[in-house]
Image 1 (cartoon, rainbow, N blue to C red):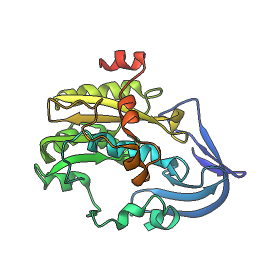
Image 2: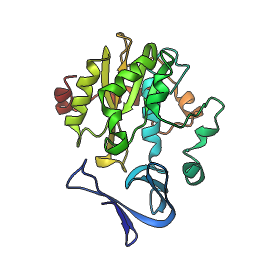
Image 3: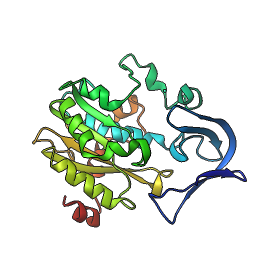
Image 4: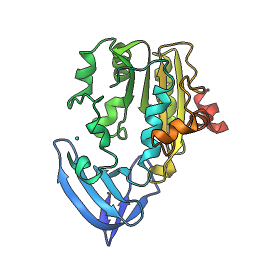
Length: 257
């Protein structure tokens, strides 16, 4: 059970038995429940404002950029010409993270992602699934019907990127997901980034492409240091893109990569 007690938030999960993550709390800013989830936002001692959904840390102001930049640009910069891509407490308490909602490029749909994709066949160049852990409502986002549905929603040569859990804690789940994806997509890969407030300080990404020539280890779109600075990126660059696909030996062996 995840609790805020004596000035600390402690996070436990059946997905990482025998360990927990704790942050010191300065002030609880919001507690409530949406239609689907329990929501907490608190100001922490060292990680800024923190968003908690159903007792699990989703993001913090200090380190969210590593995950958000990597889940976005690993797939986008592996596609030759991405044009078409597949929210009030966050806007209020996490303004630096939610600036994208004001972008003129954004068309926002709130609803069932399965229904949305079922009604949009061969429409998207890139689909990014920023899912929570495979417990409860998000469990279906790690199963074969979802990946098959994404395939039908992609244009020819389209790419998907999904949250891929932690290789230190969830390797059997990652292996199962990768094997399932290989039965659907001609190219499947796994990348990762470091992020201290996620379990064991690491999170991964399952990358799939309909284009048999895709090489996720070598981005097609390469940015100069000046371009990275102009985009105000703090984690992603071309070298980190390449390095993200280089996996520890035991992971490569388990995933047969």
